[in-house]
Length: 428
Image 1 (tube, rainbow, N blue to C red):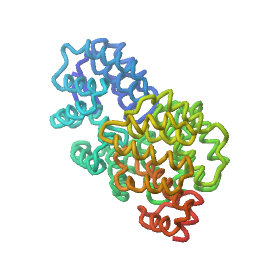
Image 2: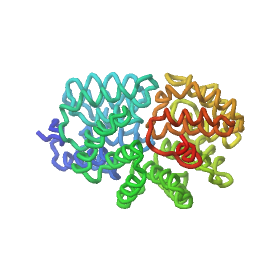
Image 3: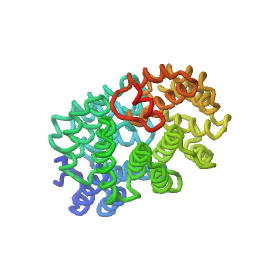
Image 4: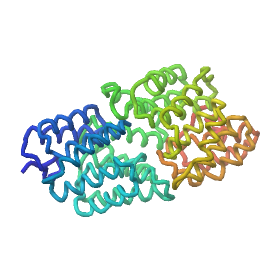
């Protein structure tokens, strides 16, 4: 019987299907290009190989192609006769995920992993800051994320995919030294693992190692396909570091070519959130934002996220609408936000509206209450810095310099934000 790279049996009699599936799985776990095509080749070699169809469905879902993912999942279910119990559980968990039943998928994944902890395609949806835990809206989700990967760690040993994911859990929980060690191991195991290269950038960010982080990441991404899963987001890291270095011309160039709508490909959630986050950081740094930029991002948000439902996207859509002066769209997010993080989405949408109106006192009053619990919206600590920077900017512009200085002193602690905030940090 054929097996995958983790030793799990596969219900296919085709060596070619097995080989294509294993290759596609590695590409998927490394966030590299070609995973969906690889899963498609496996299914073509053996149309009855249900996991090949399911793998393609998951790869398509990660690229924001929901309808195609649903069709591929239907093919997987049609081919499910003759699956092992492990594969049936695999299909059930991924099916719930493709069907947008996040709570059901999470429960199914936890149950499945108790019996088959090495089913990496089933563990993957719960890893990272955009996963089922990261986007759960629950308080304490960073501790929950670390507990999840802690439980799996004894089973995976020095596996390059898992080491990176466990390292990300540690970064978000503040265990930077431990994470650095794991990420170096992950990159040694697979130097082209985009997840490890990306998460290593988070270690540099948290440690305030801007120059080293920028040098390493720019060198690594030269050979990374612009159509790959993390291309847009890795470029965002480069752009914000360039801005922090004071090289705004290069920062804007990277933004326009590799981050913004119409630049390099990226899943819509990355394009929206990374674009809005960069532009506000640039504005805070004193850069002139080109005319029409916020309107372009508001249009993009309206096209790809017309209805509130994903807190992290909703916050950035609210920012784009607010800064573009589109109060009706902003009010819709504030009024229609629901789910576990609906309260914080509504509150932050109102706060960002005040910020866009230059009502600095109101912005401070509305932003401040959410600083202690904004992990609930999802995303990484580095991404959510945007909210603290907005608060700092509002404090400075309202003349409340001492409060801004105290907030900087209390911030976790070491990296310097972009000017003009950097000047205040130096004074602090």
